Image (spheres, rainbow, N blue to C red):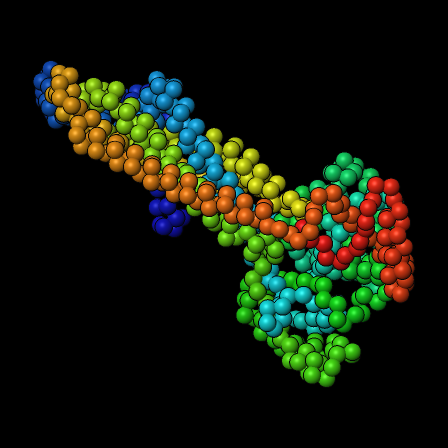
Length: 600
């Protein structure tokens, strides 16, 4: 075995043995006593063999061996992790101290739990919207293909040319988001859906939990209607039925055969939107009654993603796209555009941007608001820290005699501060445990607010290592923050005066100034929160009292979609007029009108 490997193995084994010894202190003490007795007996035998009598040999061996207690402690320190044992002892003492004051413990834990929970809840939203990677294979390899000027939507002819010409990436995919009507008649029942290229699931590396996913064979012109369901949609609409494969689902009054169900956790690559049904791009001709939507060179509705080759770079992908850009644009020039527009179109470029986190409309819309909320709840946490610091300072008054005794017995100030800090950090960790439950409730409540107005926002708010690490880090910092100053003040006690019950103890003049400083800080932070809340309420009041320019009382908005009726384009206006006439003749309806864009 090579010497470096042997050294590493000995080091790992030594640490493991010391950790095991920490878990069996009685057994370790017995082993040390036996080993010391063996060495002592060997020394006595050597002295007797040298000519001493037994009594003299035992005395000389004891003199050479030294103080057995000191030797035992030195050996024990070598055979265990002393710092870990000390931490374990501090934790046991902290648990006993907190159990002895249940009222204080409950108030402190709840205060910290609300503060830490609010911060964890907001961070969970930030993590879900901006930080969490897509639930696909190697999301760090994904890029989004864009056009010159930052435009990121493409026509289907452009997509087909990019798909057939590019070679700098391991694969490319295209998709378009929309919704499908699941009802075969009567009230419309919408479900979020996605039109995807045949390479969509293969490039993303998404496997099915039942059946199969769509492939390039499914995405051919004139294809039959096939569909893949997301796991959530499958559970919600079919109750997780195992015989769903082969069934027919109605999408905009057209039958589609269900061929597979995706694995749990995947519902598309648009963060905040959970697609329930995936159908191939070629089925657009089925949904649009063969109106040539796939050949339209001015219909911009597709997003294109790609996957970099393993070990490749973003620069290589960008260079490859730049090479094929001219050929792609020259082949797909819209024929009805003017000469100047066509010339400008041919000068277009292609590029790529990192897309590890997918795409999202709510990311840019709520990013600033989320970070603002994180700052606000951070102030709330500071106020909670000040409250607990006041409680700790008041609690220290009752522990003045205990601290004085420990100081009189020789305990150092640093050792006492460490013990008191262990108690405060333990309080913060208990508050973090409470805060995790509060965070899950509060984050879901905020998502519910975002989902109002006819829009459903779907976010993965499950706890991951990033959220747990944030919560643990906040709890540790908070424990040290609110515990350090009270712990240091608590140890600045005169043992002689405290034991006699004389003097002003820990609540002397300097301690009173410290307590007053905490109160001033609390008031300042609370004033900031009150002012911010007042500004927020004022903004809401002004928004609520804005005159929209029309009377909203008694107005009912009805969404109507007649695209599946198969009406020719020239009959649409006639149909709308007939529909409005019938609505105006309905009992209880005073007037009816139609619009393409309806005010919210």
